[in-house]
Amino acid sequence: MPNIKSAKKRVLVNKTKAMQNKVAKSALKTTLKKFDAAVADGNRSEADIAYKVAVQAVDKAAGKGLLHRNNAARKKSAMTLKLNKLEG
Image (cartoon, rainbow, N blue to C red; front, side, top):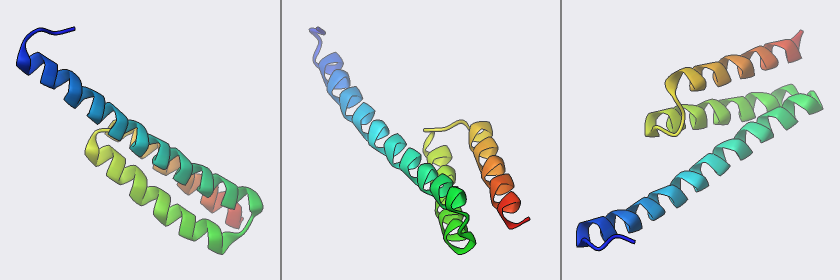
C-alpha cells in the first residue's frame, strides 16, 4: 500500500479506469458477437445494421485506446469479408 497521498490517489484512479475499460471492452465484445450472430443467421438486412454498429464501436474503441489501430483495422476487415461472403 502506498503511503504518499498522490500515490494513494493514483491507486484509486487506476482502479476506476480499469473498471471503465472492462465495461467498454465487454460492450465491444457484445457488439461483435451480435454481428457474428446476424451473419450466422444469414439475415442480410440484420447483418448490415449490426455491421454498421460494430464498425462504429471498433472505431470508438480504437480512438479511446482500448484497441490498437491495426487490431481495429483487422477486425473491420474480417467483418467486411464475412458480410460480403454472406451476399455471395
